[in-house]
Length: 305
Image 1 (cartoon, rainbow, N blue to C red):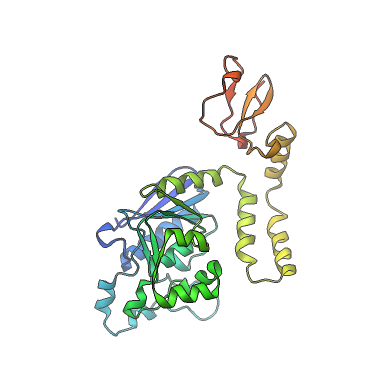
Image 2: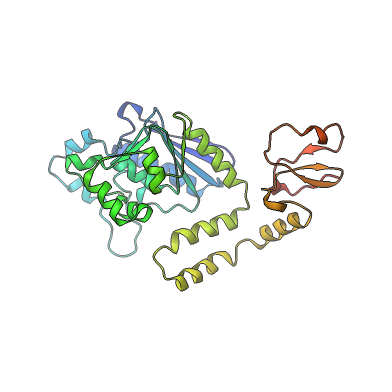
């Protein structure tokens, strides 16, 4: 299998597993990834992680396969956009044309170059290893960006920087990517999947109607006027699950989340006591009482008497 899915209740990790080719994309891998992301999109999972096995996120289009096409464009034209509003076929790199209905975090180890960079840009958030890198390396082979790179890159870094990166085809290190807004976090090599899954769980623990409403608004309001954007934000958010909002307000009224605390708490003698990190040792001043316990998640909204 070139694609695997590691599933938990809330977080799915979609793994491209073709390390012998540095996860370069051939037609089978592209089809398998589309199938995996379609399954994820229809599932009850709340957040996804996209990861390349074997120390490379994706080295782009498989040029050995591309070479077999010669000068023929017949296979490529099978991926042409249809006339009208019909659903388009997959992109050359697979899921790059999909519009997911939930967050996706890219865990970038090693090269994410050419089409691999385009797949990374397709993700909502990117976490890079300290030695990972981007680059439009297809520049040297005379192959243009066809999986959204010319659309998504300038939206993240601006037109001038996007033109410079695309036309020179140079290497963009993780450190530069962080500085110019191409990634949101840099971690030690080998830790991107762990960090991405941790962030995914953080997102998944929140009430999801509001999370998804804000995600849609951030994505859909780009390019709109302020008035148009405000209108769309209102339409996306005003009907977000009122039960979730009411439950959140009820938790706040009982003491949760005060003073900027993220609403993870200890409970002692019937009152909520703010505490920062789930899983850390209970402070000595709170130990010893039978009613003192760790509150596993603010989302559960429990107050122990």
